[in-house]
Image (cartoon, rainbow over the protein chains, first blue to last red):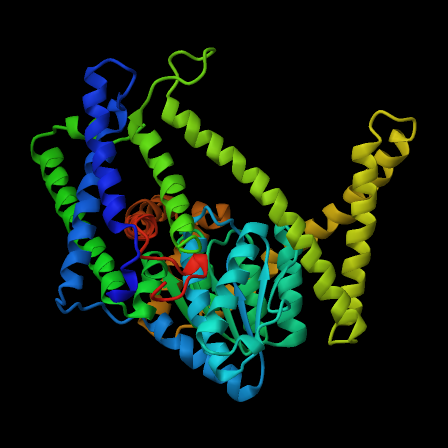
Length: 290
Length: 228
């Protein structure tokens, strides 16, 4: 809890509250300010979601015990790095192909930090090839900091996190080449992937590496499921940083998310019953943001 | 203070702007668009600025490519001939690309454009197509492994896949006319239900992650240490 003393939670909440209250008030003054009526359902959901998450974080801060179900893929992270260490081979980490404005990439960087910390502790070589230049810059900082945190800044070099190309298939060819030639013992494919997902995972499968994948791209999940040993499906990827850090505050947000999911489920059932028995679909238009 | 607070504050502002522009409208900032949403305009401007950041980062990336690969070549590290090919391809393509870009108005424009075009059309595009077409083989090998019936889940996967594949095969459909309806039902009902479950979970996960980033709880992407 101490570690988050410097967070923007308080000024952030104040600013958010100011934005939410000032806009409708200004709208009455006719200065062009106002709520976008077409997205009012999203605003309601945003407020409810924010409140539930903030309350969950608050409860976690107060020391309430939190249970988060076991995620096999994340438990296997250390096993995969340990295997690489025993075999004396490198760990390959692919942070997806999208830029830093994609939430999956940010989630991937959080997992990368955890992986890099362990490779630094064990002295295992790590390789992080990048497709996006902004992700490359962020990944380099993340890994450098992880090596520093692990007390092994001497092991960090610029060759660990390196840039390849901005072209999707040229990048795929280069990473597949690394997998086939250098035979990493563990491959992490975590982030946002598209057509290259199967090409990368199948190339890694062919080398016999232990593979841990994670993505929220629904179309790519089946490819990872059939070719990788463990797959973080959708929300598991976003929960990864909280799960790995075991910080109560982070886990609190995951519990809050579960609670909102429960509320949405109840909402779906209520809507289903209304539509089935009363044929009233008026809510449908309200729930559809433009 | 500056290392921690400023990046977190910038993240908060840049993260809140798209949310606010989606939910609220503000006074127009441009005379030519008096009904425009001012908040959306600011948010879009921020998004456009990202191109500048990306261009600067790309330059950093190119420098890194040269550093890493030159080191590999000079050390005769494993796979150094590939590094050499990589650097040669980058230099030659870069040279003709820049020549093409800077000689548009000059008499040599035709040569530069033809050379660059040839590299792209005769070299780059066929290589791209080759990589993409490998997918067909990988789909077959992945399917072969996935469809081995080792447990109940694999058996269900095999049955569903067979149903979908046979349901779009004209010869099979002629013999079993009810199959396309069954295939469509499988896609529209159980498959869509599972996909929507994943999508809802992922969307909530992304929103939760975004909120953690906005309020500064999640900060590993900034390279900040615990306690900073």
